[in-house]
Length: 160
Image (cartoon, rainbow, N blue to C red; front, side, top):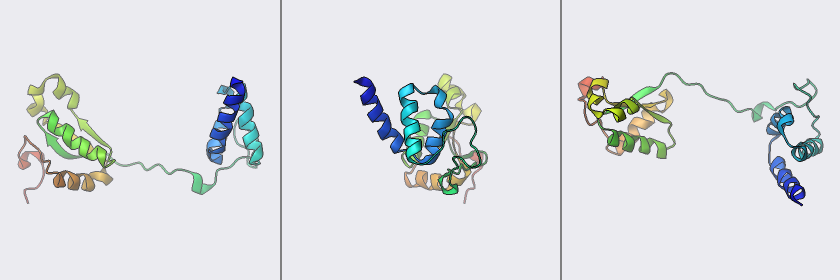
């Protein structure tokens, strides 16, 4: 009975996958259970896909160009703010997190270990991807989150 339930569940899961995702599963079919492998082969046969023995053959499964996910590689991270105190840095990071902007607090762990060295390290630095820097700065300005420890001349930001 459990195998029948598992078969129905897997049929539903595999039918929702794209051809590319199915092809990726078929390449790693050796790690699947017998039930999962048989359901995968049945779904591939329904779609007219040939099973893979290893690498895709030229006439076999091919991903359509529009199905491939393009992964953008950005440059080095950019600092948008510095904070002497971690609570203020966490608030700023949460603002960016809520806007789904990936961010990172550099030197956070060192300041957690000994908060007294925050000034020595230049504070906790809120870092973002270069393409997100302008949006992140605007969000932090809108939320009235400013650096709390270092004057602008020390942060390298212009005083305009």
